[in-house]
Length: 407
Image (cartoon, rainbow, N blue to C red; front, side, top):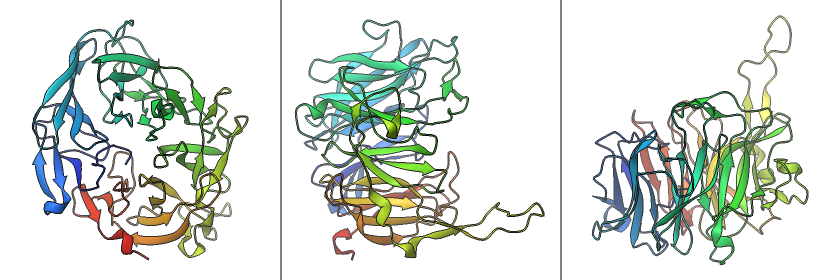
């Protein structure tokens, strides 16, 4: 949902086949990226043919798509950063990394399925595994490619960066355009082969911002207080320097959408970081959309059913338009297929979401680890919505038109 796959005019976007909602198998010969031309009957034109193509990002001017061909293995292989026109022409290899990263002993492998481009189109970032195949709790890292100089820099690394979700700030301000939103999964560790092991620590994931030269490490004011936990879904609010996350709280048992701004890190304190500025966007969610959750609840030693537990809200994935004025989100209960809502954003840091509109039930299967996640997002102009569903028996991408007429 945070992938940069659209042209700025909202007329074309990149999607892929033979994949899941969290990426693809880099060994799958059927995996391929295609350009969907909405105005031409949603016609599909392949733009990649290489096995291992992953992590696409469309340039801010809508002319090109960068992607990585992952031919890496632990301590070997290569990754190739490529660029191609959205019409399939002018394919170029920008850079090949087939040895240790400059100034380090790390050979990158297992490229993350997402990349992100700076708003000026000059830098691309993605995440990689940095383990040597022998050491437990190996590091993961964030790579930043200078696209004009064809160089790469490892800007942060460590064992807690295994699911980084890097996202460049979309602001065109020269300073803000160097900021990258990243996710730190405290307690999650990889084994020597990079497979996730262990459990999160008691306070869970937190979200940071780092400048793309590795300096100015900051914290988002979310979670880490023993009650609120970050789900690990977050994105910038359009082109602003505000970002939004979805939470879990124990008391009350719900999941809200909270916006905030980065501030100086004080030791992974999350919402208790000094100077925190937060805004509960979903506090205005209409009661008519609340739901009851009664499964596996009893109120006596004899196992008598407990009274229904009314949940105020339980939001999961979400995204905004590029102007930061419209938001789409999925919400529980997901075992019944899910719900997708559209809402309006007001003043940054002050107003709650308003004008909630129920769009549809995507009839998705049970929300389980590794399953089809709905992941709704908007076209840059906010007129189109997209989501995943396995209603047909296969995970498919769907589009909703005419959002400007939805009242």
